Length: 331
Image (cartoon, rainbow, N blue to C red):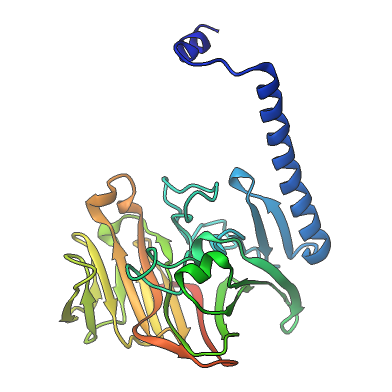
């Protein structure tokens, strides 16, 4: 009680009625989330494969479980995959310690979306897809050929909020699935408007590393890249001459026309292999001392469509995929 008295000193004490209203509102909010999760499970849940749960701050998540023991979790807010674990229980992705889940800002970590703008530009940083709720459209766990691959598909369409920033009608369809230990992600953007539109996009993927000094990105030697470390709005154009990209300072580079296969060695004798189609570019980012509390533990290797904007005509679509797998590089 002493602490409460000090905290309340000099402040107006809330009335009993106001306190009761606040408590009722909180219970209603929890009830709505619980009802939403229950409804999602009833309509889309698949026992043993796809389950909806209440995540942090009461925000709904979908959990995919493969028969091999691999799992993935995605928040419907931002359609952000925040966990991908191997059958051993080892986590592959990284969520920053400053991440919040109350929808006040995008989730910092996992696999956030950048759409319809990557980086700074005419609208808010990285666009709006990462700070909106996506709607579940379907789930599946079809034998492939004799193991069930759990999958969830979510969609995002225009709203008054998005039209103020980007005056186009669209439908973004995002599919997340587990094929054995492999995480598969597909983004399809459909133009439902009567005029063409352009956009840039990325999957801003955070990977956990043993320590950043031991991390290496391979597969990008010889490429032209835009170094955004000094000024993201006016990047320097360089050519990569290293066999493996390592991290000794702030790193923010966009590799143009990158190969379909890129690997991130995480410092444990394992690497994350990214095999993509449609994305075209690769972003490598580590904040170094600008995030002293966590930069040692992660590296972002992002699939992007940035060097050349995607142009989609009315009634047509653009699709990009990435398959992520953990491989042994210790030999």
